[in-house]
Image (cartoon, rainbow, N blue to C red; front, top):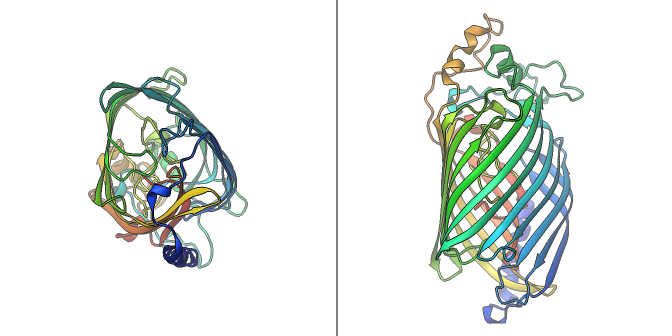
Length: 438
């Protein structure tokens, strides 16, 4: 990973000596633009990714460039860590007058899905030696199996000026179970301990169906969607999830606020960007398999879960911080190093050093978590796998990324980060994927 980043940085510097910097000569894209690519990525949580994808853009007569009229993406890929992905999504900006339509249809198959318990630092984090795993061997203690089918659609219409109303619908089918991989069967997992202690209840232990209805307001003054250099994007969403399919008592009502600002520091070359997110449960109960979901009307990343991983707080364990309510902050500088043209497309390369943090602000089943150890009757008396007695505090990380951007709409992303606290992850987190985080 370090070698790849070094090569790209050297390449960026070389291009800087020869690239033409006159933005007035930027190619105005019109009509159809196809971007078929092999999917070659890496994620510390998932492993090496390989597959294929295609981005299909329509720019119309070019009047709105770099904005597009609509975009469709198709992807099929798999990870060496045991996960696979099939996805189709579309973003249509001219189909609805003064509005847009978005849809996402995705299937995830995760043979090793991270589960670190509830409520952040309230849950213990055990190193392999504490778990009794010999050096060089792997443990499945923090793994479970999860398959998810997701179908989401959202519509946005202008109210006045930069203020919009938005509404959406989501359906999720989620299946969960113990890890079932050769070489791991029979080991203890935190997921199984949670089931044994009743923290994960029988009527949710193997997953279920979630139906969501969303309504919200959006204030958007950004100069561009995928690669903004100035403006605000604020989304406030009320989310209702009536349990009318499974009828297990998991109806709930929630609220999500996500606010972003992009501050130009030097022309469009250097931008300071930040995102503040708050999500809270207002009423009802959420099943354990859905508390990690971050509710949003329009997705920027394939994974919309956290905190942790590549969609929220970069550098902490994926799904390492979950609860009924969560808050997070992402801050970064975006420095456009060089602009250049290649294969009749507009490119630029940018660096984005960042600092992230987040924590649980509304605990999930915390009283049950405190009492869970006694519920096992001393069956696992070497350690308490459920509760530390510690209060939840901020989880913080820092890192840096490199972006290769084509036509300001297609973004290849390289990022690495490190958690400040070893309980959030003991290794350097790195990811190769698509798009800015926000």
